[in-house]
Amino acid sequence: MVAARDFASNPETLVPYRHERLENARYGRGFAFLHTIGLKDGDTDGYVLVSTTGCGSGLLSFAGKTIDSLIAEHLARAEHSHRDIPDHELSAAHRVAIAAYEGGLTRIADMPGRAAIDAATADYAEFVLIQLRRSPHREDTARSILARHDFLMSGPVAGRRYTQPCPRCQRPAIYQERYPRAVCGDCYYRTTDKAGRPVTGFNTHLSGGMIAYYADTRESPEGSPTEECLEVSRSGVCFIDGHPATMQEGHFGGIVVEMENGD
Image (cartoon, rainbow, N blue to C red; front, side):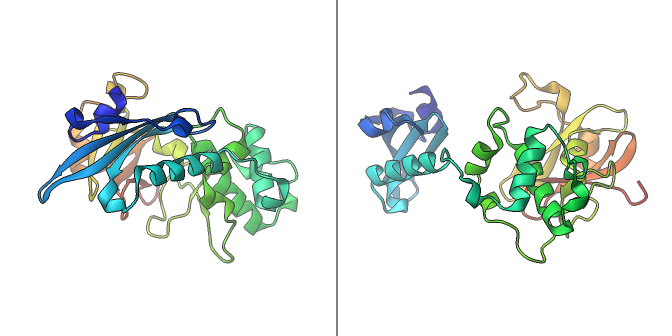
């Protein structure tokens, strides 16, 4: 109920919606609530779903669906994300990435027998490995993580490039044509101000904008930093291992960190 109140636009209108299948589901188990949402054109019906996989809220009138159909979709997604992935659904690149991930490797280049893997397969395997290592569900097996991310199961597109060498450490980074000097995930989280104090960037709104905070001002490991780094917010200039870099909002959102030319 507390989580539902956090998501409801008007907590006083929350009404528990009993749903035996949702409340006893193997995956995605949780609770549903109906509530009234006040819009400029008047009140409308809304809902809140609180589950073991997260919370959600929305408009029933906007979705054009019933609360029962939304719960059914939620449970179907939960089952799908916990499915077993058989061997025949895995490409050669997937198998290489899984072996590297389960072997604790950070790049395909360190795989035994790497010379036998063609360049296109290795490129996509590096991409998959990066995504596996980025997952917040690191305690899960590689196949369990893949089951949660359908875009990784679609396989590589012929002729497309997926990774590029990080300009700072040469580890694989996600290829971005617009940002040819974007750093890898490991270097991304080592950004500092000029004095060497760790900083991290955030978007200021959904439409973009960038603000930098001192990473060491988190109140908890999961919390957001609280003290702004005005130096980096205003200039976008940051440093990785003492080398100059730039921090900026990405073209489609997010924060991009690039090394300066020559570093």
